[in-house]
Each structure stands twice: as C-alpha cells, then as structure tokens.
Amino acid sequence: MPDNITLDRAIGALVGGALGDALGMPTQLLSPARIAELYGHVEDFVAPFADHPVSKGLSAGTITDDTEQALLLGRILIESGDRFDHGRWVNALLDWEREVKARGSYDLLGPSTKRAIDAINNGVPAEEAGRSGDTNGAAMRIAPVGIMVPLQPLDAFVAKVAETCRATHNTSIAIASAAAVAAAVSRGVAGGDWRAACDSAVAAARRGATLGHWVTGGDIAARIVWAQDLVRGKLKRDAIRLITDLVGTGVASQESVPAAFAVLEIAGGDPWRAAEISANLGGDTDTIGAIAAGMAGACTGFSRLPQDRIVGLRGIDMEQVRALAADLVAARMSNGHVGKAGSGKDAA
Image (cartoon, rainbow, N blue to C red; front, side):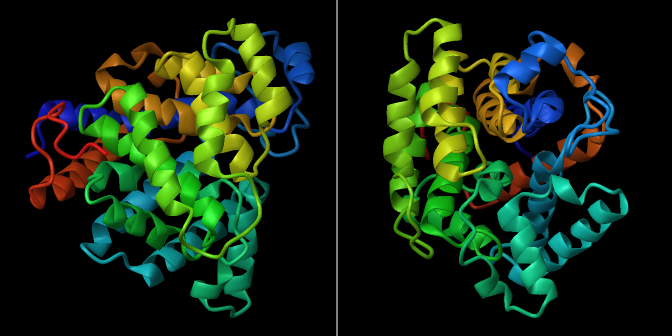
C-alpha cells in the first residue's frame, strides 16, 4: 500500500492541477485588461461570459481538457504496465476526441493535439503524427508520469516522458517542457519542496531537449531559470506584468511552461495562490494554472489544498482521482523506487 504522505502528494498533484485548470477556464484567451473588465480580479470560480470563444456554456468550476487528458493518460499508464502502450493511448485519445466533439467542445483541444489527432484520423502513423507538436499539450497532462515514475535514473525518467509525447508532441521543445513539469511533480511526490522541484525540473528539461524532432524555440531549461529570476522578490502586481510582457502566456511551450514556473515562484509554492495568479494573467490561463497549481499540489499534498474550493469543482469524480493516484503510487513503489516521503531517495 502507498504510504499516506506519498499518496496525499499524488492526489495533491492531480487535484491541484484541476483547481488551476477550472479557475482559469473562463479567462483563457482573454487579455488581462478584458479579464479585469469582466471579473475584476478572479479569486474564485466564475462562469465564462455568454459568447466566450471556447468556454461558453460551462458552469463555474468546470475542468477542461487539461485535467481530462491528465486523468486519461494516468489510466493508460496503469493499463500499460511497464511498457507504455502507444496504440492504447492513441485509441484513447481518439475516443476522447469523439466524446469532446459530441459535447460541442472540440475548440478546447490544443493545436498540436488537434493536428495530430486529425492526422491519425487521416491515416498518418501515430509515430509520425507528433513531429511538429511544439505547444504545451504534453506538459499540461504529464503529471501522472511524475507520480508514477521516480526521477532516478534521470535518463529513464525522461525517456518515459518522451514515450508518452510521441503521438502528439514528439519535438525537443515539447518533450523538454513535459519533462520539466513531470520532474517537478515527481520530486514533490518524493517529499521535495517546490524549490527542490524546480531544480529537478531544470535538470530534466535539459535532458528532454535532446530528444524528439528538433524545432526552433528558446531553451526550456534556460527560460525556466530566467523566468523565475525575473520575478523573484518583486511585488505580485509587477511580477505578473513581467510574465505577461516578457515571458509570454501563449500556448507555445517556451512561453506558458516558463510562465508556470514563474507563477510558482510568485506564489511561494502555494497551490491556490498559483491558480489565482494564473487565472488573471491572460492568454492560456487554464493550462498555466493547471501546470503551476499541479506542481505546487505535488509539493504540498492534497490535505493542504483549500477543501472549500475543491467542492466547487465540476466535471471531475474525486473518488476516481483518488483511485488513480493510489494506482500510480503503487506502481511507483512496486519497483522499490520510493521510500518514505522526504527521504530524497529519488531526488535529481
């Protein structure tokens, strides 16, 4: 059985991500000025305005594709066993895409995932479909890999990340981004605090950048360090402006992933603060929030998340989340990879 602390942190990663996702759902694609005009300062779940380009019709607190794909990936990881079942993952994505279309929410899909799914539907082999996927879809859903796989050996850890990226985001920049986020989660689950998690993220991003098809874009590891240095010690208002003006909050991996780490810095590792900051940034607020609050949740644990906010989440089955987290932690421990949380046994 997973020990209680490790399991608490695993659940914290998944639910923290859901909180950030849902809080940012109504503000995604909007400018900071438009967010302020519509909502003032977002600090609780709100419904999107009536003609929102992608979130219209959703209730306040509803999760999006960020959380849904993370939970889907987690289930495929468990069903796959030691060797990631690439075909099962592609088929699960295709089934999920059909369900999303039936709900009328196809526009919630990110550009790389949508492009890859369309290519697979048109007969392109899955291993080729992700050759140009360089946006943040892999990073947004990668937390289950961080829960299940220990950081050491680092090459094996990053190889597992890359394996799950292949169908949709098989590029150096997307794999580096996903590796950074997964490493932060893995370090948190192992007992590390958010600063240690960021150190592990940078090391994993450097390794991830050597895998997949090379594409142009700023180096993820360097941009994470730069983005955090940029906002460190600044007033929250000024730090937010630096993220929006300089780091960027678009779907490009080299913007949104370093932005999420900068948010983590401003929030001091607090998951709800990370979600709140992200929701008011403008741009890809739900994904930045999901990544930042998910990493923070892995480092604090579910028990330290705001329980009054969790009850406001919509579109998520908490019992299924708990069961998935338990399965992922059990898989991690079954190989003897993890001792008591905080031992540093698999720190990078």
